[in-house]
Image: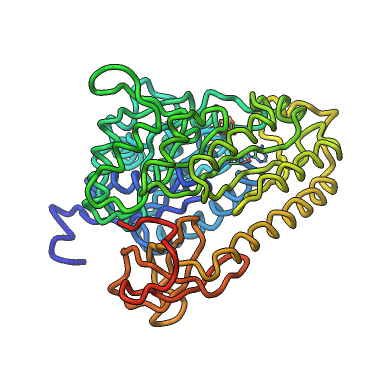
Length: 471
Ligand code: 5AD
Ligand code: SF4
């Protein structure tokens, strides 16, 4: 314990460990929880064993989420006991969408949990910690959807996210796809004002970020009041963020096909820093299933959006999410999905077996649920197709020169690992001074999940124009 560690018998510096599951929004939320707890003396550590407080930031989107949380809680209970026997204390908190959806059950089943809260109340963490401190063993539950926005109460982003940073601009969802828990766990759609987004982006860049990814459950539904009146959409916001000093790369995720407006599509042609890569989930290629999912677009609507994106930015790479085995999905429906994948050609894609989520409309379609064996078979077929496309996409990079943002040390000494414009992992021999910089790399090798290449110094650049204008 350092000299400043104790003041009036109170420990000033306490250790915080946050374990994060799920989407990038949860990663962002975890960083913000650390920001909220910094002024009350908590600093992040890498292991639960070293912590005075452990927060499990959970995900409820697919199966077994709650079970995973309970098994993790079992381990933490043992740790809490060991700490108590040694005269110490461990605060255990459950945050995120499982906390939101199952708060009362967690409190009942795991009474050793000190705090449960959801995605919309973590700005109140200092009060919750004070309440937990005041009455140990009581349990603090805060899963309401407050009238205030947490963004108005969070302390300023501390700029600690590093080279590639997330920035939440939109949260919640009003679309109510029939399989999805997000509208229930994250609440109604909310867009942060443009001025707040720009201020946070400036702080991230000052803190060392080179790449910013704008986040939202339905990010392209973002809308904001323009300073001079009227409305801004995401396309306009991207243009504004792209003006900021120090920005090398800009991304946004996750988009709904129906909110992909012409201005946003045009932004892809106009903004050099905007990466030519869009995650655009379609879920299914069957109009019947899309309707049952309440996606409110057809497979052809999606094809048209893809066509427009490609017309705007011919080198664009696409990614998607797919659900197989949605209730009532026939072999013909599934064949439509495979056909859409074949026609579209993806750089990568995520795919999942449909999982009934408690409280969602599709979970109640009892007669139409698909047997697990069928889901397994369809998932394997879909993934085989996507993997072929991903490998072909990666192989097409060989011989090209592209900008890579080096964001971490590589596996071997003398190597760095970075990301291509398309989010591919790229290994190259490079000194540590390149960390946090964009460098031109000539791709020499392609694998299923990564690329390798050599730095191209400006003097002996040998390929055609790079894929991306570097900052
Ligand atoms: N079952 C399976 N996959 C789901 N997703 C969302 N809800 C479910 C569910 N109930 C998938 C969708 C979404 C991604 C984040 O998770 O594909 O785009
Ligand atoms: Fe869930 Fe996305 Fe549908 Fe919203 S648009 S309900 S977040 S799948």
